[in-house]
Length: 370
Image (cartoon, rainbow, N blue to C red; front, side, top):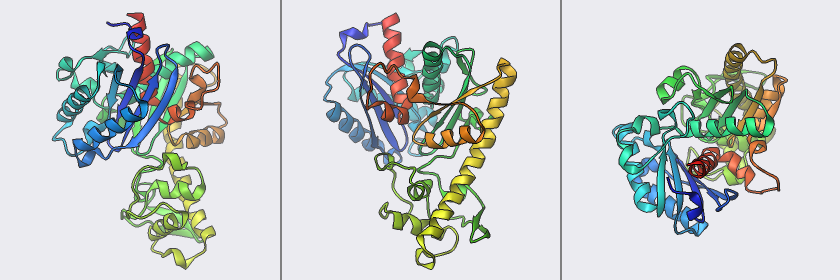
């Protein structure tokens, strides 16, 4: 392998179905920038092409060591995941200048840090598909050992659409499944997030006006509407389109939420709609708490340690912190696992875009060691 010092920069790429995320490191492996841009990949590969250009223009980097992971192969423009992996990989390879390597962590279970060239992708597409969570887990497990002298934790990464639960046992990821199908069965992958999740997926009934009411099975509102009203969602992270294509104001968010229970926003005051948003938030917390308890119990039985830390990552890590507090467990923000001898304003965004930052660090370390 080539030494990364021959490149001035290392870039980690996380190609999603709704966003493209990238993290830029300097020649010493220090974080320079993290950028997330909308990328509606379900509309076609030109969306990814344009998103890559936007990030490269922002970074102003001509050539680099590139590490690439993805979940975008799942979008329905592709006939299947194999076709998606091959198409995304080919486009990334064509667009980027420098050494380009694709993350295939589960291909070698010894250290979860295998990287492949484009010529090797088609034969190993299964271990490349939707592997970004494993890059995050591998990085977090190593950092937990190095910086916190701890071998056991539960990593919970809540994104815009999904939540990843990864048990970290004996200093490495301990997974029941590696494919999306297997991880959904074991609830290591749960399709609930804080931006794009339709509210009808959070509850069939919800507390409202001192009682309970059914929730409309319609795509009227999303979880982003909830977290705009609760004040948890930062404007910088609020990139997805709204359910009705209208603006993202508090009033418009309340209008969409009101429709979920058969009302117009004008039928009640904003206090009422804020309470309804809090009720939806609690439904999501209840769902995630149940899954958290299952994984914590597994770690406790496997590792026989008295206290387990919960690591929060992703745009929805504010929910992870709340769950940990509710359960009276130690909470660790994933940014506390970054090498931060000096304050770096990019660390907060790296916490949101953890797979991109993790993959950049993993490839940098991998190349240095080889």
